[in-house]
Image (cartoon, rainbow, N blue to C red; front, side, top):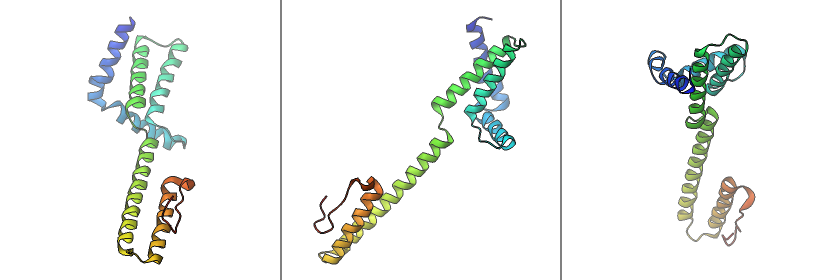
Length: 156
């Protein structure tokens, strides 16, 4: 088989009948990853499945048992792994995004609360001092210890 034939055949496999028969490789690899994780007691991802299935095909070729289909499958696993890596978010990415979303929500809620308290404080010096303390805490939550507000003047 030529390289073009191998790639054409791999494309037919991963984008054609097999996908229709078994569903998307990403979904299928996720099921495999979950089963491997349960069996081995370590976390596997869809990308791990693509890479390890590629290694299986490489091992078959190395041991002399590989056929043209082994190279087609290898190209298919590489393509699926490449797509997973470059276009799909990993669980870690999704968790980071979710945590950032939650943090932003908390920041917005806290800032709204501070603004409402500031409106209620009017010109009362004690209440205004409390507002600046709240604002200082908010700034630390958002920026760390980089920003510090002077509680008396309300300036940085």
